[in-house]
Every structure is written in C-alpha cells, then in structure tokens.
Image (tube, rainbow, N blue to C red; front, side):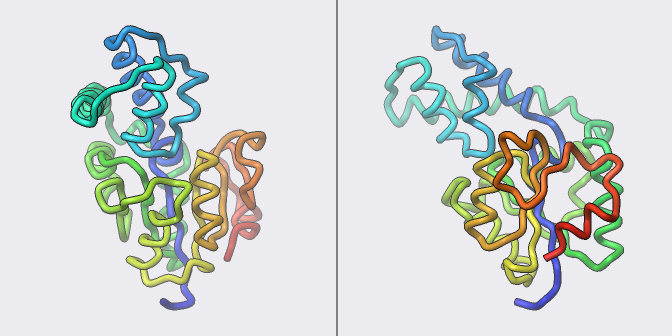
Length: 218
C-alpha cells in the first residue's frame, strides 16, 4: 500500500440511477408471486446483494421458498432488471459525474468502483464508463454484502492505496457503514437525513465546488 489517494464509487444512485429499474423488477416479481411491494419497502434493498434483497421481498410477502426456488426467482428478477438496463446510454450518467472523475484523475487520484451489483460491468459498458475505472469490484468478486467492508477493502487493495487514503461515494446507509468500517472517508450522495453518518453529504456531483473537495480529502 502507498500513501496515494483513491476515490471509490458505488454504482446505483451514484454513477447512474438504476434504483427505479431495481424497484420495477422487484415489484414485477412480487406481483408474479401474488403480493404488492411498495417503494417504501424497496428502500431497505439499497446497497445490498440480490439474494439478501430477495429475502426482504419474500418477507414482505410472508413467503417461504426453497433454495432452488430462490435462485430461480432471483434469476428472473435479474432478467427483468437487465431488460430495463439494456436501454441505457451514456446520457444516463448522472449530471457532473464524468467531469468530477476526470478532474480527480488529472490530480493523480485512482478511481475504483465498489458495487454489490453483479451487473456492474454490463451497465458501465452500456453507458461507456468502464474505461474510467482503474478497478471494478462487483457482486461477482465479493462474498459479503455491505455493510461488510469487503467490497471497499478489495478496491483499495487492487489500487494499492491504504484505506485511510480512500474516499467512498455512496447513496445508501449500508454503503456508508461499510466504508466507515473499512477506515475510509465517506461522501453521501442524497438525503442528509438518511446519510447523516457520512463525513460529507451532497445532493449530487453537478456544480460541486473545489471547496467541497477540500472537505473530503483523506
């Protein structure tokens, strides 16, 4: 590990907003299983793995399934989700993200992705963002979901940067907790009421000023 700096980004809600797609896919699956799944209930799914999300959805519907059935329905949900994601283009990158990453790169800051999504590379390819990341740690590489710090610690390891030199950008409380447990600085993207544990909370990257960047330097 060296004394350099790295920025680690979550994907959903930070680079692109696919949260709506996730909700629509889970809602479709819930309806298929005979119950409703609300947007409020969907909040509990942010930042966690597909199988952990399925457990929450099934609990909402008071359903118990066999391991084989769980795998089947998780796969169906993913197919619904990818169907929606397949329509994404570079225009779906959230405002200010690319400019922020380019400025960080110009300062010699390493850039990594730390996402629970197993579809992260597919989505990054669709929005032409894969080339902007020095490492991608997704749901195919980690065993433990956030708030476990594994995803971010692996990203720091890939980049050769000590955890104390990393800043994590997250839109979920579970992600902020994971980064904190990894010993990293944290920036919440979204609502301060939900992300109050972060070192800094911003509404988004659009219009982010240099004075804001000073606050989050390791």
